[in-house]
Length: 397
Image (cartoon, rainbow, N blue to C red; front, side, top):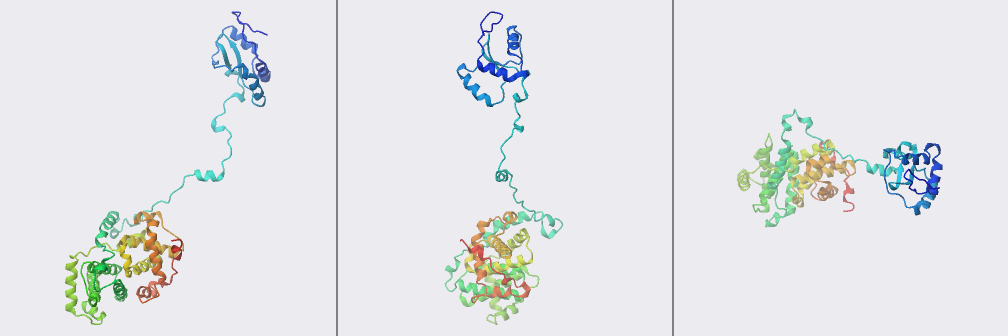
């Protein structure tokens, strides 16, 4: 059958595929003859879209594949406009309407994939000074700037970790014996923590610049403690008490002469940030209770005795002591974002120093230098030295 328009031009006879499609559409589609008649009369259809036609040699293949698909509403027809596909949008069925992407059925996503796609909430950094707004002694307004200044100035109070090589009559063991003894003296006088840390700092800074005979090493320690007491304490031990402690090994004149020599050698520079200064800040960041505080001071006082710990700056010694104390108290590694923020040290940076402190803890009760261990084995310090060391930090080194 050949369809002609009003200009008596022959149109292409519809293919079997088109006839089959027309039959499939049934009552939901207008008859092909009606559409042809409208086209023949030249009526403009605003819903007609001019597209490239399918070649006839693919018609049979498409007809086979469409048997198992939804019916297509497009009608292929030849007209005066050439081969074209005429789509009547007005008579599309519900199946012909495009489905919004939001309503399309998608395959279920694996639960593990959903977890990975979720945003990971990072641990917030806690404001440790928010509760001290009304405490004028805490200087919350400029405490951050204060510790930034301490961090810049801590190198002034540090000494070379090899300064003992310049001493002809002294060695590391003599230094360790002196400091171990001074820790006991400090405890008997019931002095402040600041005094002990400043005493050790004065000894190292003085010996790094001044050669000394071993018979005067104890005098150096006593004078350093005397100067630290004058700087830190309210009630200062008198010179006579220090002479009695030394079993009258030195005279009052010798004590005063050594005091002058030490001050001149250090150029009267007594104000240096020690490990204690950083310790108080870092314990606050760790929300330390009394047990954790005692553990941290026990570990860092063990480190004061050891000459090899001079290679670490005071801020790192304090941070490592707090980290090792947390591991000892909790039994697992603990270093929060707040601690990392306020100490400026990550957990990895503290491992070397902390492991050395754990080793000191393991052998604290053995050997000849047990002054720190005896001190923290008393009821005054809650027998904190009896805590089991965090040996798991030493694994897989």
